Image (cartoon, rainbow, N blue to C red; front, side):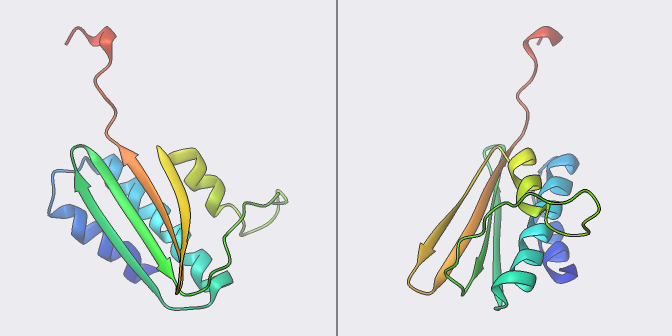
Amino acid sequence: MGEARRFVRDALAETDAPPDLVDSAVLLVSELATNVTLHARTELRVTIRFDDGQVWAEVKDWNSRIPQACMTPTDATTGRGLALVEAIASRWGTERDGEGKTVWFMLEVDPPSASNGK
């Protein structure tokens, strides 16, 4: 997962993505990469881009089984990855293809608040 985290951080460092968005993208890609390692047990490919105030990320693996969130016991050390994606991402989903699947998410820069006078 370290390689996936470094890849995301390095790729987004080349953009003007806000640091909090970069941190969230690193966390979510790390969680999805961990899911691939623990459950899909295949190689993975990470794609990421920042455009128009949005981070788009995809984690591709070669297992067609769609991940599902589970009820994680409070003392469990794993099992919260999809819940984190659900809580943090603006949108997310999965897509099957002929070779496996892709889990993707989108993060958006928060628009300026109307109450700040700008």
